[in-house]
Image (cartoon, rainbow, N blue to C red; front, top):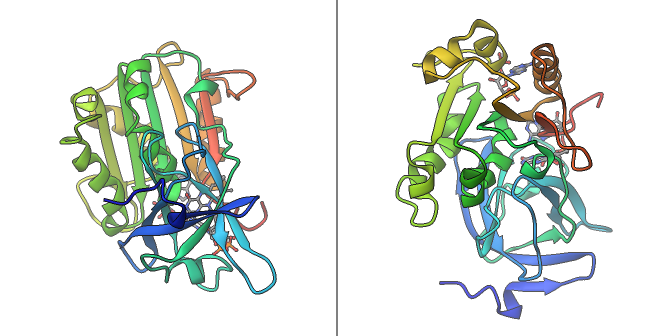
Length: 271
Ligand code: FAD
Ligand code: A2P
């Protein structure tokens, strides 16, 4: 068992901590997750992101990353894309146990329960690596104290790209800390868009047609009872935001809690 209190695992470099990599798992040619030692002083709210990166030739290469591990965990987990020729991920994809990843000291973001009004059911809608902040939130006991039910949806092109979220939900069933709280109250719904499967279609379409609610046996979205967190591409966020506003949901922020919150999973072209 790794002792994260040991200085050797974490070097405080001022603006960043250089944290030792403790676990790496590759899912597909495009997706992997890794863990690092966690600085004892690094606190974050589940759902937040921070800057992480690698030392570069002249200066560090840093990118925003959602923290995928829960706030009680003694290591940090990240779920990552591998972008071909990407300044960071073309190198990050090769990290090995014992390598160091730079981790920023200032977590931030809007995918936090503080930015939502109280409600009964919390929807977490994600595509691609947008599942990362929800990987943290679904493993957080406090979320199940705040909401009666949590519905976590993940849509990807192929079934292989769902491996991470499926594994998380499966592992939660026997998790000693969160398993009991999540039992019967965490509803997981996955779908694919470029393969055949038991559930197919974009989340926008599945909401619009009502298929999502039929499949999970829950009523259609209602701002009286439901709260929504969304993480995905800009196009996905824009469409879902428009759909929610048409249903009477108001966007929330840390300063003014509302019925839904959004965060982009990456800053794509033209954004
Ligand atoms: P970049 O030059 O940053 O990106 C090149 C292109 O690759 C982008 O223009 C975009 O079209 C595409 N791209 C980048 N990231 C993604 C992605 N995640 N999914 C699909 N296409 C992408 N990335 C993660 O892998 N995991 C996270 O948890 C995560 N959290 C983020 C949180 C926020 C708030 C933001 C703004 C971004 C987040 N990102 C996340 C994206 C991340 O910051 C980098 O863009 C990504 O690691 C690629 O870095 P790069 O330098 O290799 O390529
Ligand atoms: P699709 O295959 O129909 O494009 P990507 O891998 O491009 O980041 O996409 C991840 C998932 O998000 C895919 O299943 C993709 O579906 C879906 N998606 C892309 N754009 C949207 C959108 N505007 N609204 C909802 N889902 C989207």
